[in-house]
Length: 313
Image 1 (tube, rainbow, N blue to C red):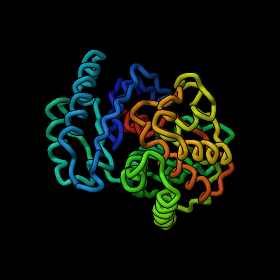
Image 2: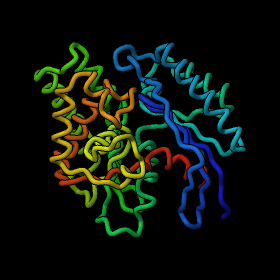
Image 3: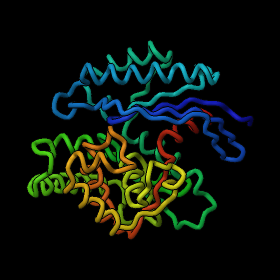
Image 4: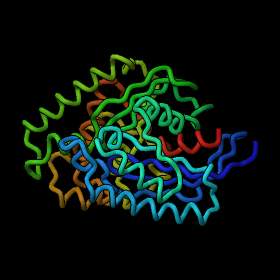
């Protein structure tokens, strides 16, 4: 097979991301031509209202217009574009407004994928380049998003997967909205919520069976950047770095006790993550404690890369 140029778009609860890449199915190599992210917060208020907010839709459509221009500039044909939408647009009563707007701007039908398909794509993106390494298997990929978190266990193929409704935006809106610093009571209730969701995940996925725990998405990569004390976000330094349980515990405690201004001043912090990173880190900590993993491999390659490979397959 020849090299294929594709455009993959992942529209999640907190961000919408674009990857334009050349893929070589023969070697498994992916060459980025453009990779970028916009914090659109599509899931704003969905947990409480059941609807996509007008301003959230407009932020999303503005990002789609920007991405459409880039896709055209790189010469990607319409049959080589795939946009998948995840937790927020699964939950919303007015999801058709989102679908119609994206279709008009990008000329493709957005796919509101199931949590199970989201999990499979995350696994593909996160593990494709791990083949041939000495990392013990099976891999347990944890995709910690804005509205949901996916757990996927497998080696070359997926053996078990489950999506549960815990994510940095959803946990923040449920538990951490009444004060700048969450109270001990709020933290305790958030932990109980997370642990109940982990119980659900464990019904489908043996969470303690992983040879290697792999973490993907913005919460995980941001925590990694904090642990590495990077002066600015550096995806090359973060990719395939390792986080120990003690490091995640320390950073989580620091974030939960930091003001908005203190979190915003962290060099690797994206402005769109400042208000949700503490809840996200708490989810990550609870996941690591539940799995019993001593450490976690951080991957910058995730569902976006999985979407890209799904186009070329």
